[in-house]
Image 1 (cartoon, rainbow, N blue to C red):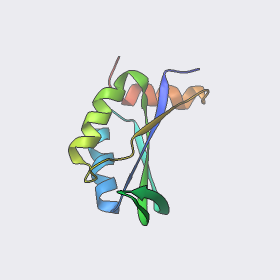
Image 2: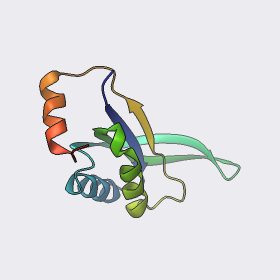
Image 3: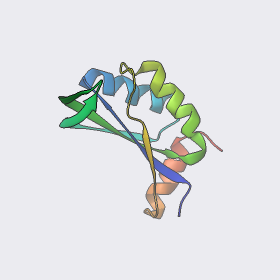
Length: 107
């Protein structure tokens, strides 16, 4: 198990996903943010089933930076209740994880 995580969030607009990505990389809370989409999400919201086109951000960071990363996402995210989920990175390429560690804040 590594100290690294991937955090996922989704937005309605590609421009919002880009704002989130840029903010996180500029603050060195993420080494890389990949924007994937458009994707289709189906979910229940306020007692109705909704379907929406969204853009997914896959954020690479370290577990100890999660609180600051979540706060930074919430500062720019337009959703009332944004999806912000973290999953652990069980294994990874030594070279990639070394690069990632050099691009984010030191712990």
